[in-house]
Length: 505
Image 1 (tube, rainbow, N blue to C red):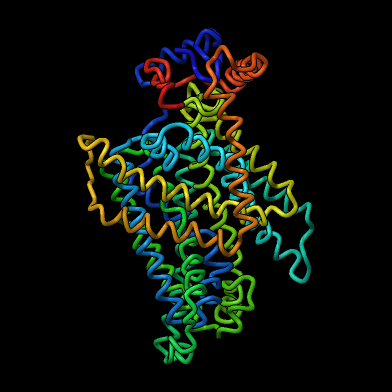
Image 2 (image 1 turned 90 degrees about the vertical axis):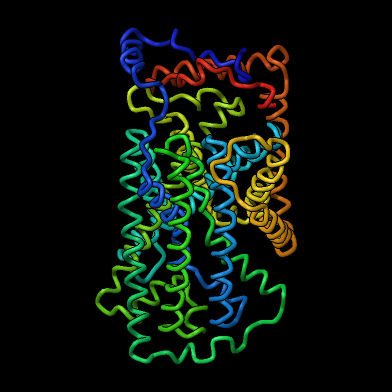
């Protein structure tokens, strides 16, 4: 069967030296290696969930709830809800042992068209926008000490952000273990910084400084709309629990380590979020907290005295680690999408010696660099809230659907249907909220997702004979030179097992 994109990507295009390397590596299958351990998995999830948000702007929940007590309750509910979703992904990840997270699960349950729209949304808006914003936040905190009393130069910030993206792309191209070691290091650093914040808060409590929490529920809002927006803010801070499902195929013993990583990570993040907010509430009054554009920095100025310099560094390190996990996840998404025939086949190539998806990593990096050129890139985040929650909910609805359509499928973990049903109902709420509160931006996001229909029609739906010949020639030429330039080839799975074109469609 010919690949849906008709790409001339085979070992005939390789030089003699490259073929010898492939033959030597034949003892090890030409596939990405299972090098992600349990500890690496925990670091990936914790590192992606705990981004810059808890340091910079955890005030969204407090702003809408209008009391410390209700805010903490909603943070706890957000953690429980996210745990439900993560447990559902533990079942999906162990029964559908494919990288790609929600894309792979939607493809398995609902077929190629919806999965392609999910992939297209990530490619055009979700992944590059997220990574550009994280990189800019990192750059802002790096240059802040140099420009303490004024806005840093626009060009300097963007260049540092670009350097951040390029450095992490390079690290992950060279070796998977390099990427996981960077992730481990920066996850430990951000957790230690938050533990320091928590310790200060607990010390203040032990000294009896609890004035701010004497009547924690006083002034709590009773408006259902505000409570919904507060919970929405909390849930968005917990996003990232699906990170490990993007790299399932690279995990050591995924049937054990995937659910275990999720089970360990989720309570850690929830407890850290709750205690960090308690520390903020103890030290800062509500007006100071809501007025701050960088809550952790304000906290440091108030409580850490000469050690206040630690906080900006911690925020920068948190951004760097969060960006690394995002790059790992996004590159695997594009890699799997190409392997399934939904993207050009050049993105499904791996390096013949390092076994890393170099073309997918470079493509992801280039997309993020392009979005750095957009001056108002932060506004683009508003476009994908609807799409993000819709596709996460749809993938978990796929779990319920597969229970009935494939009852005999092997499931090492089998949850009660209570968990996915509750999560799906709550996701409806998360889809409706942005449509109600930010209708224009949500509709723009839907339009961006639906713009993938012509691409799907030309690149996947049409038979090979009917596709534009110039596109086939273009992609074939690109793939040929990518193979030669980056020493890449298709993995053995692609060469020996034909991709199901029917499923891709």
